[in-house]
Image (cartoon, rainbow, N blue to C red):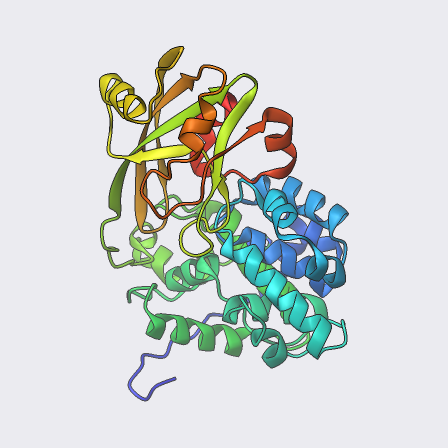
Length: 362
Ligand code: ADE
């Protein structure tokens, strides 16, 4: 902690552990001490809700039951296992880390906080979670849930997204954590944030084991905390999605190897919101007159810093016209289109969740 940074102190946290024992949800990753399984769960739980994670977690581990299996999984299959979870760099980093565990740690997941923290894609929170849950290392695990709980317990009004606030809260948690109950303490803090000390101004203080000690509750300001400085507004990108169908096959292309949704597969899209006559004209320039051209619903997908606002069309091509379009990369730099039958798309090609609205047409 830097010299002038504010220090905060958590109250007596004893009631938290007994509350956790009685109220914890029965979640699959709470029945294991295998660091690999805990790691998979924690990476999936970043940015994704518990209920959405459970089926992915089960399927991922059935196919890739250990670090060696993850290290050796072909990329396209790995992307398919992650399809719909989003933030695909999470799983790419996991595979890099798995290769590192195989090469540098003899295939055994490391046991110390520092070695775990050094793996690709593992930050302070995840290293604290894995090392405490799997090995009882007394390390704090401060995620957004814990930041919110502490901000309210201590009526801490600094911007919780700032690095200084994270340091302050981490030190307060470290001081309050019972060294012989590190895992349960961390899980209990996360659980309290997830099911009682809820975000968006609706905490269930009546159910909270710590309400008598909570400064925000005493001051009546729990709905105003935590403070988050407004992020820059997201850039809005208008797109036109074209589902090009030739017989039973649909056109896809692989996104570039770097950047947003790297290496995933998608339908053709053009910049801006085109009207039906614009699409017809664009196809005409490719030498194509479609059999049918049908507008689909519009859709929006929100990324961290970006929003895609999409309009869509289904284009039924004449037999043989697919080839004409496959050879025209629309903006010069992209990979070429190819046509794939539906079963193959379902089995092999990971399509980002951003295209969910158009998936039924593919
Ligand atoms: N969110 C992050 N980690 C979690 C965990 N271990 N259990 C429930 N929710 C979580």
